[in-house]
Length: 251
Ligand SMILES: O=C(CO)COP(=O)(O)O
Image (tube, rainbow, N blue to C red):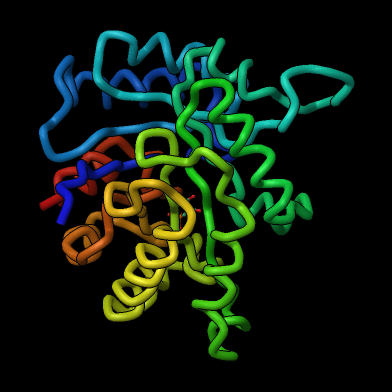
Protein backbone atom coordinates (compact mmCIF):
# COMPACT_ATOMS: atom_id res chain seq x y z
CA UNK A 1 0.00 0.00 0.00
CA UNK A 2 1.17 3.51 -0.81
CA UNK A 3 2.16 5.46 2.30
CA UNK A 4 -0.08 8.49 2.48
CA UNK A 5 0.52 11.41 4.81
CA UNK A 6 -2.51 12.19 6.89
CA UNK A 7 -4.32 15.47 6.29
CA UNK A 8 -6.06 16.96 9.30
CA UNK A 9 -8.30 19.73 8.02
CA UNK A 10 -10.41 22.16 10.03
CA UNK A 11 -13.56 23.54 8.42
CA UNK A 12 -14.39 26.61 10.47
CA UNK A 13 -17.66 27.13 8.56
CA UNK A 14 -19.29 30.48 9.43
CA UNK A 15 -17.36 30.99 12.66
CA UNK A 16 -14.62 33.35 13.87
CA UNK A 17 -13.88 37.02 13.40
CA UNK A 18 -10.47 38.43 12.54
CA UNK A 19 -9.13 38.48 16.10
CA UNK A 20 -10.16 35.04 17.35
CA UNK A 21 -9.45 33.44 13.94
CA UNK A 22 -5.94 34.83 13.82
CA UNK A 23 -5.36 33.79 17.45
CA UNK A 24 -6.55 30.23 16.82
CA UNK A 25 -4.34 29.99 13.74
CA UNK A 26 -1.33 31.40 15.61
CA UNK A 27 -1.86 28.88 18.41
CA UNK A 28 -1.83 26.01 15.91
CA UNK A 29 1.15 27.46 14.05
CA UNK A 30 3.14 27.56 17.30
CA UNK A 31 2.39 23.89 17.93
CA UNK A 32 3.27 22.79 14.39
CA UNK A 33 6.33 24.96 13.90
CA UNK A 34 8.24 25.32 10.68
CA UNK A 35 8.56 21.64 9.91
CA UNK A 36 5.40 19.61 9.53
CA UNK A 37 5.01 16.53 11.70
CA UNK A 38 6.12 13.56 9.57
CA UNK A 39 2.72 11.94 10.15
CA UNK A 40 0.32 14.69 9.11
CA UNK A 41 -0.33 17.97 7.31
CA UNK A 42 -2.47 20.51 9.15
CA UNK A 43 -4.96 22.72 7.31
CA UNK A 44 -7.41 25.38 8.45
CA UNK A 45 -10.29 26.62 6.28
CA UNK A 46 -11.60 29.89 7.72
CA UNK A 47 -14.36 32.06 6.24
CA UNK A 48 -13.16 33.94 3.16
CA UNK A 49 -13.15 37.30 4.95
CA UNK A 50 -10.32 36.21 7.24
CA UNK A 51 -8.22 34.00 4.96
CA UNK A 52 -5.70 36.78 4.62
CA UNK A 53 -5.07 37.47 8.34
CA UNK A 54 -5.14 33.74 9.10
CA UNK A 55 -2.59 33.13 6.33
CA UNK A 56 -0.40 35.82 7.90
CA UNK A 57 -0.72 34.15 11.31
CA UNK A 58 0.53 30.82 9.98
CA UNK A 59 3.04 32.19 7.46
CA UNK A 60 6.04 31.06 9.52
CA UNK A 61 4.72 27.56 10.04
CA UNK A 62 3.77 24.44 8.10
CA UNK A 63 0.03 25.09 8.67
CA UNK A 64 -1.84 25.47 5.36
CA UNK A 65 -4.90 27.61 4.70
CA UNK A 66 -7.91 26.84 2.52
CA UNK A 67 -11.21 28.32 1.39
CA UNK A 68 -14.62 26.74 1.92
CA UNK A 69 -16.05 27.25 -1.58
CA UNK A 70 -15.21 28.91 -4.89
CA UNK A 71 -16.88 29.92 -8.13
CA UNK A 72 -16.14 28.12 -11.39
CA UNK A 73 -15.18 31.29 -13.27
CA UNK A 74 -11.96 33.33 -12.99
CA UNK A 75 -13.87 36.62 -12.66
CA UNK A 76 -17.07 38.25 -13.80
CA UNK A 77 -20.52 39.46 -12.82
CA UNK A 78 -21.11 37.01 -9.96
CA UNK A 79 -22.22 39.05 -6.95
CA UNK A 80 -21.14 37.52 -3.67
CA UNK A 81 -19.02 34.80 -5.24
CA UNK A 82 -15.27 34.28 -4.93
CA UNK A 83 -12.97 32.91 -7.62
CA UNK A 84 -10.47 30.19 -6.81
CA UNK A 85 -7.76 32.58 -8.02
CA UNK A 86 -8.91 35.09 -5.36
CA UNK A 87 -8.54 32.47 -2.64
CA UNK A 88 -5.02 31.73 -3.87
CA UNK A 89 -4.28 35.46 -3.95
CA UNK A 90 -5.43 35.75 -0.31
CA UNK A 91 -3.03 32.98 0.78
CA UNK A 92 -5.03 29.76 0.37
CA UNK A 93 -3.57 26.59 -1.08
CA UNK A 94 -6.67 24.38 -0.67
CA UNK A 95 -10.41 24.81 -1.17
CA UNK A 96 -13.31 22.66 0.01
CA UNK A 97 -15.91 22.06 -2.71
CA UNK A 98 -19.23 20.25 -2.55
CA UNK A 99 -19.67 20.28 1.21
CA UNK A 100 -23.15 18.93 1.99
CA UNK A 101 -24.09 22.31 3.48
CA UNK A 102 -23.41 23.80 0.01
CA UNK A 103 -25.16 20.94 -1.78
CA UNK A 104 -28.23 21.39 0.45
CA UNK A 105 -28.35 25.12 1.28
CA UNK A 106 -27.28 26.31 -2.17
CA UNK A 107 -28.67 23.51 -4.33
CA UNK A 108 -25.26 22.59 -5.72
CA UNK A 109 -25.26 19.58 -8.04
CA UNK A 110 -22.29 17.33 -8.66
CA UNK A 111 -21.90 19.02 -12.07
CA UNK A 112 -21.63 22.42 -10.34
CA UNK A 113 -19.08 20.99 -7.93
CA UNK A 114 -17.05 19.52 -10.77
CA UNK A 115 -16.89 23.04 -12.25
CA UNK A 116 -15.65 24.43 -8.94
CA UNK A 117 -13.08 21.66 -8.52
CA UNK A 118 -11.88 22.31 -12.06
CA UNK A 119 -11.46 25.97 -11.13
CA UNK A 120 -9.49 24.99 -8.03
CA UNK A 121 -7.03 23.00 -10.14
CA UNK A 122 -6.78 25.87 -12.65
CA UNK A 123 -5.87 28.23 -9.78
CA UNK A 124 -3.23 25.86 -8.44
CA UNK A 125 -5.28 24.95 -5.35
CA UNK A 126 -5.82 21.45 -4.02
CA UNK A 127 -9.54 20.62 -4.15
CA UNK A 128 -11.13 18.83 -1.21
CA UNK A 129 -14.14 17.22 -2.87
CA UNK A 130 -16.88 16.28 -0.39
CA UNK A 131 -19.32 13.42 -0.78
CA UNK A 132 -21.76 11.74 1.60
CA UNK A 133 -25.21 10.24 1.93
CA UNK A 134 -28.21 11.42 3.95
CA UNK A 135 -29.67 9.28 6.69
CA UNK A 136 -32.67 8.38 4.51
CA UNK A 137 -30.35 7.25 1.73
CA UNK A 138 -28.36 5.07 4.15
CA UNK A 139 -31.52 3.61 5.69
CA UNK A 140 -32.71 2.72 2.19
CA UNK A 141 -29.45 0.87 1.53
CA UNK A 142 -28.26 3.41 -1.02
CA UNK A 143 -25.28 4.95 0.78
CA UNK A 144 -22.59 3.44 -1.47
CA UNK A 145 -24.43 4.09 -4.73
CA UNK A 146 -25.12 7.72 -3.76
CA UNK A 147 -21.47 8.32 -2.88
CA UNK A 148 -20.26 6.55 -6.03
CA UNK A 149 -22.52 8.74 -8.15
CA UNK A 150 -21.32 11.91 -6.39
CA UNK A 151 -17.70 10.90 -7.01
CA UNK A 152 -18.27 10.21 -10.70
CA UNK A 153 -20.09 13.51 -11.12
CA UNK A 154 -17.83 15.75 -9.02
CA UNK A 155 -14.23 14.73 -9.73
CA UNK A 156 -12.68 16.98 -12.38
CA UNK A 157 -10.67 15.91 -15.40
CA UNK A 158 -6.98 16.01 -14.55
CA UNK A 159 -7.50 15.13 -10.88
CA UNK A 160 -4.47 13.52 -9.24
CA UNK A 161 -3.37 12.72 -5.70
CA UNK A 162 -1.41 15.97 -5.59
CA UNK A 163 -4.26 18.29 -6.58
CA UNK A 164 -7.30 16.50 -5.16
CA UNK A 165 -8.46 15.06 -1.84
CA UNK A 166 -11.76 13.26 -1.20
CA UNK A 167 -13.73 13.86 2.00
CA UNK A 168 -16.43 11.35 2.94
CA UNK A 169 -18.90 13.09 5.23
CA UNK A 170 -22.17 11.30 5.95
CA UNK A 171 -24.68 14.16 6.20
CA UNK A 172 -26.35 12.67 9.27
CA UNK A 173 -23.03 12.57 11.16
CA UNK A 174 -22.24 16.27 10.73
CA UNK A 175 -22.61 18.21 13.96
CA UNK A 176 -24.75 15.49 15.54
CA UNK A 177 -22.25 13.60 17.68
CA UNK A 178 -23.19 10.45 15.75
CA UNK A 179 -20.77 8.53 13.55
CA UNK A 180 -21.09 5.43 11.37
CA UNK A 181 -19.66 2.23 12.83
CA UNK A 182 -15.97 1.69 12.16
CA UNK A 183 -16.98 -1.17 9.86
CA UNK A 184 -19.21 1.15 7.84
CA UNK A 185 -16.52 3.85 7.59
CA UNK A 186 -13.95 1.29 6.44
CA UNK A 187 -16.36 -0.19 3.90
CA UNK A 188 -17.19 3.22 2.44
CA UNK A 189 -13.55 4.30 2.22
CA UNK A 190 -12.68 0.99 0.55
CA UNK A 191 -15.46 1.53 -2.00
CA UNK A 192 -14.24 5.10 -2.64
CA UNK A 193 -10.68 3.83 -3.19
CA UNK A 194 -11.93 1.30 -5.73
CA UNK A 195 -14.12 3.85 -7.47
CA UNK A 196 -11.19 6.27 -7.78
CA UNK A 197 -9.37 3.88 -10.08
CA UNK A 198 -11.60 4.93 -12.98
CA UNK A 199 -11.44 8.61 -12.10
CA UNK A 200 -7.85 9.57 -11.23
CA UNK A 201 -4.48 8.47 -12.55
CA UNK A 202 -3.02 7.50 -9.18
CA UNK A 203 -5.94 6.25 -7.07
CA UNK A 204 -3.80 4.54 -4.47
CA UNK A 205 -2.11 7.81 -3.54
CA UNK A 206 -5.25 9.97 -3.17
CA UNK A 207 -6.06 10.99 0.39
CA UNK A 208 -9.55 10.08 1.55
CA UNK A 209 -10.66 11.99 4.66
CA UNK A 210 -13.50 11.10 7.00
CA UNK A 211 -15.67 13.92 8.35
CA UNK A 212 -18.64 14.04 10.72
CA UNK A 213 -18.41 14.40 14.50
CA UNK A 214 -14.68 13.67 14.68
CA UNK A 215 -13.39 14.55 18.15
CA UNK A 216 -10.39 13.69 20.32
CA UNK A 217 -12.18 10.69 21.83
CA UNK A 218 -12.92 8.92 18.51
CA UNK A 219 -10.08 10.19 16.32
CA UNK A 220 -7.60 7.36 16.98
CA UNK A 221 -10.01 4.56 16.09
CA UNK A 222 -11.21 6.34 12.93
CA UNK A 223 -7.74 7.40 11.76
CA UNK A 224 -6.50 3.87 12.39
CA UNK A 225 -8.77 2.42 9.70
CA UNK A 226 -7.41 1.37 6.33
CA UNK A 227 -8.06 3.97 3.63
CA UNK A 228 -8.80 6.72 6.14
CA UNK A 229 -6.07 9.26 5.39
CA UNK A 230 -7.19 12.12 7.59
CA UNK A 231 -10.16 14.00 8.92
CA UNK A 232 -12.28 16.98 7.93
CA UNK A 233 -13.25 18.44 11.28
CA UNK A 234 -15.97 21.01 11.97
CA UNK A 235 -16.85 21.90 15.56
CA UNK A 236 -13.74 20.41 17.17
CA UNK A 237 -11.47 22.42 14.85
CA UNK A 238 -12.50 25.64 16.58
CA UNK A 239 -10.65 24.68 19.76
CA UNK A 240 -6.88 24.45 19.35
CA UNK A 241 -6.54 21.78 22.05
CA UNK A 242 -9.17 19.52 20.49
CA UNK A 243 -7.95 19.98 16.92
CA UNK A 244 -4.39 19.32 18.01
CA UNK A 245 -5.45 16.22 19.95
CA UNK A 246 -7.13 14.90 16.80
CA UNK A 247 -3.93 15.46 14.81
CA UNK A 248 -1.91 13.73 17.52
CA UNK A 249 -4.17 10.69 17.15
CA UNK A 250 -2.70 9.98 13.69
CA UNK A 251 -0.96 6.59 13.80
O1 LIG B 1 -18.98 19.21 8.27
C1 LIG B 1 -17.97 18.87 8.86
C2 LIG B 1 -16.64 19.25 8.38
O2 LIG B 1 -16.70 19.73 7.07
C3 LIG B 1 -18.04 18.08 10.11
O3 LIG B 1 -18.56 18.89 11.11
P1 LIG B 1 -18.51 18.36 12.65
O4 LIG B 1 -17.10 17.91 12.91
O5 LIG B 1 -18.91 19.56 13.45
O6 LIG B 1 -19.47 17.23 12.72
